Amino acid sequence: MKPSQFATALIALSLVASPALAQSVLRIGQPAPDFTGQDSNGKTIKLSDFKDKIVVLEWTNNGCPYVGKWYRSGAMQNLQAEAGRVGAVWLTIASSAPGEQGYVDAARANADTAERHAHPTHVLLDASGTIGHLYDAQTTPHIFIIRKDGTLAYMGGADSIASTRIEDLKTAEPYAREALEAVAADKPVPHPVTRPYGCTVKYSS
Image 1 (tube, rainbow, N blue to C red):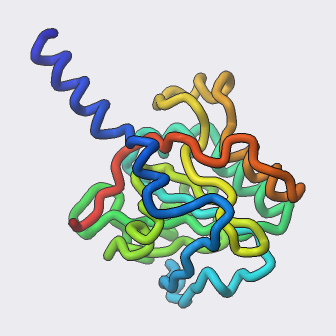
Image 2 (tube, one colour):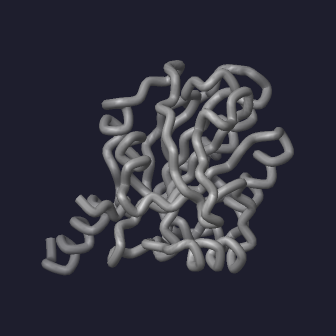
């Protein structure tokens, strides 16, 4: 393997997380950990505020090309709109630390949301990484879906193909969409735990 190929391989490995880690703390069917955070409009948000509602957690980093694929294509916005139609709460979470790629203050977070025509219910600012570590969020994007009874129904990737190519969305299995539809219909999720892929979350430690 040439040095350049080796370096590329190392970068790829750093961007794709191990599925085993996603199962180390959280359990499907168990209560999702409660948390308190501040949104980009200065409002204090608690997961427990959304009792009896479906909740989607989406980790984001606007500089990540994997996130870019989902937003440039409109796929994430469409999924957010679908969540809204079934009465779900969508929380986009930015856990990048200050000075790291994807870090946003309130103004930048709101600007990003407007520029990409996104439809989250709230954007949570988690520069300390508290919420991210609580959920062991590994990549951007990384999706978690919580049932109305507060139990975790899905955790993993947005879809099945770990690439930055928009065209791959056409053939990938839409894990997050399938999970949202199943939860909205109060049915079992077909693939409750999948591999998250994307850029690693840029925590402070």
